[in-house]
Image 1: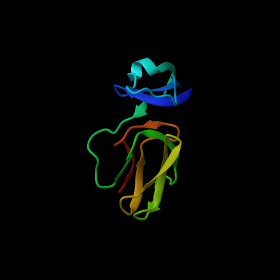
Image 2 (image 1 turned 180 degrees about the vertical axis):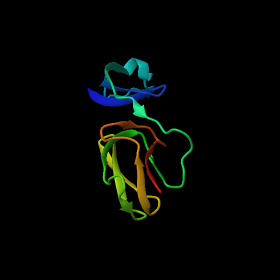
Image 3 (image 1 turned 90 degrees about the vertical axis):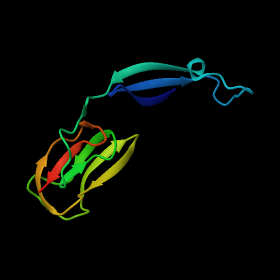
Image 4 (image 1 turned 60 degrees about the horizontal axis):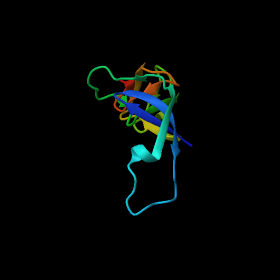
Length: 125
C-alpha cells in the first residue's frame, strides 16, 4: 500500500493505493482502473487561498502544501533573500525567501495551515 495525497476540484484527500501485480508487466499494460484500488482515508485541512492580486512586497507560496513555519515575526525588518517561511509538500521542505527588503506588515496564515500555489503568506512593506 502507498499513501498519496490527491486533489480533486480543489479539495485534497489522503488516500491509500494498493498496486496489484506490481513488477509484472504483460505486452499490453492493463488500464490503471484495473490495476489500482484507492480508498479515501481522510480529508486534508482546507487550503488557504490568496485574496486579490499579489503586490510587490507579497511573499507568495510557490507550491501547494502545508505551512511548517513562519521564520520571522510581525514588525521584523528583513533583507531581500532572507528566509521567511517553510512549506512542506510530499515530505520535502521548501524554504520561502523575502522578495525584497522591508518591514513585515502582515502574516496571513499560521503554521499547520494548508496553502495553495499562489497563496499570499505574508506582506513586506
